[in-house]
Image 1: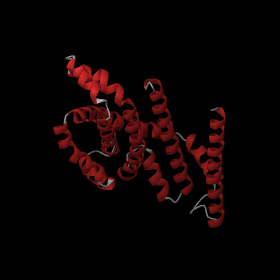
Image 2: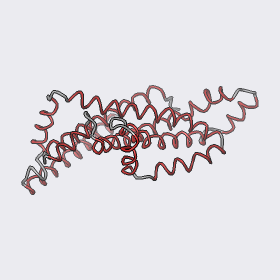
Image 3: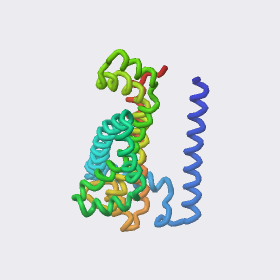
Image 4: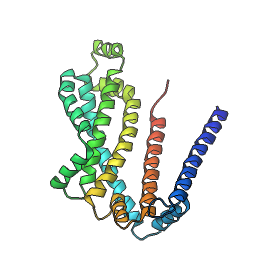
Length: 250
C-alpha cells in the first residue's frame, strides 16, 4: 500500500513538473510578458500580491461568497433531494426545474442577476444556482440506491417516516452527499469568480483579475488564478477530510 502511495505521488510530481516545463517553454517561445509570463515571474507576482494591504480582505470576500452560496445550495439541495427521492410525484415536478437550471448558460444567469441584485450578491446567486442542481441530483440518486427491502422492513415494524429518513436514508446517502458537495464546490467556485469578474464588487478575486487584465498585467491574472486554484483545492481537502470522519465504509 505504501509503495503504491509513493509511486502515485511520484507520478503526480512528474505531472506537475511536466506542466511547469511546458509553461516555461511556451513563455520562452512567445518571449513576451504581455502574452505569457514565465513561471518564475508569476511566482514573484503571486508573492507581491500576498503582501498587499487588501489581500486578505479580497480573499475573505470571495471565500465568504462561496461559503454562503454553498450553504444555501446544500441545505435546499438536501431537503428537496430527500423529498424528491422519496416522493415520485415531487421528483417529476422537480426534475424539469433542475434540468432548466443546469442547462441555462452561466453568462445568462449572471446578466440577469446584474439586473436583479446588488453587485455583492451576484456571485452568491450564481454560486447557488450552479451548486444546487448538483447536490440535489446526487441526493436523489442516493435515495434511489437505498436498499428497498430495508425500507419496507422499517415500515412493517411501523417505524415513522422521519425516523426512516434519519436512520435509514441519511446514512445510506452520505457518500452521495459528499460526492455532490465536492463536485458542486468545484463548479461553484469557478462560477463565483466569473460572477465577480462581470459584477465587479469592491473586493473579490474576480474583480482584481479583471483589473489586471485591463492593464495587461498577465502575470497578476495568472497569479490570482493560481491563488483561486489553491483555495479550491483547500476546500476539496476539507470536504474529503470531513467525509472520511463521517462516512463508515463497509
